[in-house]
Image (cartoon, rainbow, N blue to C red; front, side):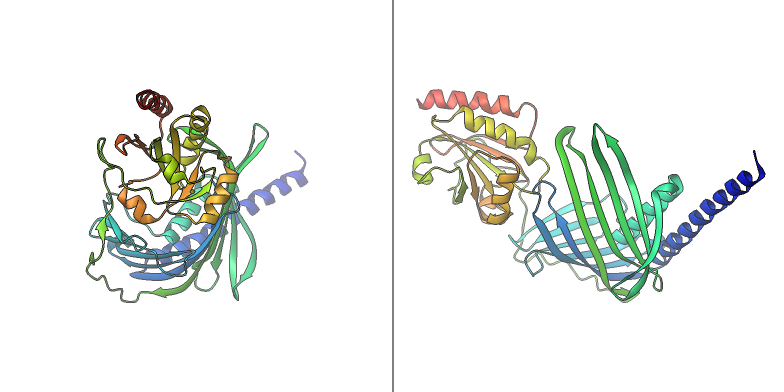
Length: 384
């Protein structure tokens, strides 16, 4: 090999190694500084697009307080979240090995035993970058420094995933800005596109967008871990209404594909009441099935009542268009969801003409359409 080529190759290798060392130095210093903290408070201003409802952007702020124990392990963490409303709507508190989630919208709470190690988002971002840098350094790009909110920052682009599959560009790109003085992450953005799955079922191709700005840092200040206050809250439902129970009154507002005077016309019909959410990954699996049932039983004594209780009318209307929904859709309050004892989405209640619950089903499965079809056929024959 000619001498000048050997020199060029050597210089290229040296440059690559230097670049990797420089990236590691910056990221490792950030991680080390975070790991040394006794406490941390900060705010996260976020914007995210609902991947199941393109064009539906949510904005809000999360205020986080963390106390660290030995070896940087979190002893206490509290997140107060505001999403689209201008006021705090959820509190999530980790304490004594348990996670407590308070929903201020409907005054409910949930308690989960937490067996793993609780992490904060900033640690998670930097540790993921270090792992990627160690395994696939070419995916971590150290771009030119940039000015962000008056602070000069290191700028990193992580091409976590980037490939062409079946003619589609599947990718996950992450941008992180780190303050050159404080060595704290100030900005994070993630965009992506690709096939999405839920419990082994393919949902389809989705696009992802989330942007976060981290502000109001307070380091090593005393954080008060007050006693938990459950006054005015009730625990979330753990089981749905049982077969044979009388269904509550369906107090909901028609949005799309609903019959005129639907409350009166439905009174003597067989009803499939479905509680859904525009942000739930399982709902796109059940939507095609509900379209088929709606078409199959058109003109029969059967009616679908698909209710959304955690979304705005505007979000629901947009979701209907984006997901090609043909069955009747309604807007309901959170109290309606509580009365029906929903435990997630989608939840299905098959109800006869006497308002008695015939089937109570949580979640989607391969056998769901066949199970519902059999029960609906039997009810219609009895009703006729």
